[in-house]
Amino acid sequence: MELQSIKDVKNVEGFGINDLMKLLGAVVFILLVIWYVSTLSNELPNKNILIIAAIFGGYMAINIGANDVANNVGPAVGAQAITIFGAVIIAAIFEAAGALIAGGNVVSTIKNGIIDTKMVSDTNTFIWLMMAALLAGAIWLNLATAFGAPVSTTHAIVGGVAGAGVAAAGFDVVHWSKLGEIVFSWVLSPFLGGIVAAAFLMFIKKSVIYQDDMQEAAKKIVPWMIAIMTWSFGTYIILKGAKQLIKMNFLSAAGISFILAIATYFLVKSSLHRSESLENSRESINKFF
Image 1 (cartoon, rainbow, N blue to C red):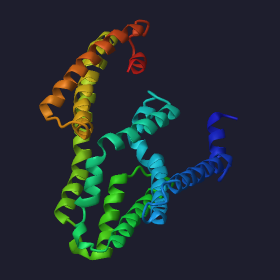
Image 2 (cartoon, one colour; image 1 turned 45 degrees about the vertical axis):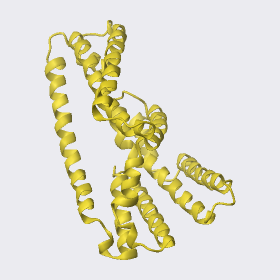
Image 3 (tube, rainbow, N blue to C red; image 1 turned 90 degrees about the vertical axis):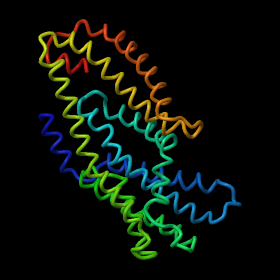
Image 4 (cartoon, helix red, strand yellow; image 1 turned 135 degrees about the vertical axis):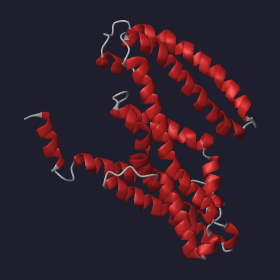
């Protein structure tokens, strides 16, 4: 039997042992979340509500891992640069790190920027409003994952908060201008992302792929590209993450990242000597990248 035929047979088997193990893993994760929250000090107010919120949060986290993380690691896995297992490890580390280091602004926007919290006078109503938004976002991600649709967690939770806010306090509770800015960014982001991606691809083709000696051209271009990525991404991380410890303006952050970019350039350039044995072909260049 051909490998493709084996895959087709597995697809029509329905619920199998692998699916059962995944379900058990999800249940165990939720139980661990409940256990951890229940071990917190009994002096905490509304501990039962905290446990319920933790269950919703755990359920949301599972769905984020199943759906939203694919947006980040999917291209690298599709390019066969990393395996799925490696992608899961990278995502587990850096998704958590990103939330802890640079997630404060997003949390603040979700909490205060979408609805006017002053119009929700009852504290319990606000708590259940937020939990309803969290559960709604998690359910939507679960459904989207079942259909294989790569949707956005941000879209889901923003819509959930706005909808729950309207249900709790009416249409006036929503900051419609702020919501409009958020929605505009959703439209603008893929457009700008597409332009930048197309520009980089065109640059790579002209500077590497269409050259007579592709390998030598790649050795010159790739270190610069990785250095540029280090500079831009490093500036962002320092501005968003380091401000939890120390306030820093854009120029200072860019200066520090520039030093890191220079170090990265020489590090990458020195590591490219192992590619000497590669042939001057598209397949070798793919492996090189």
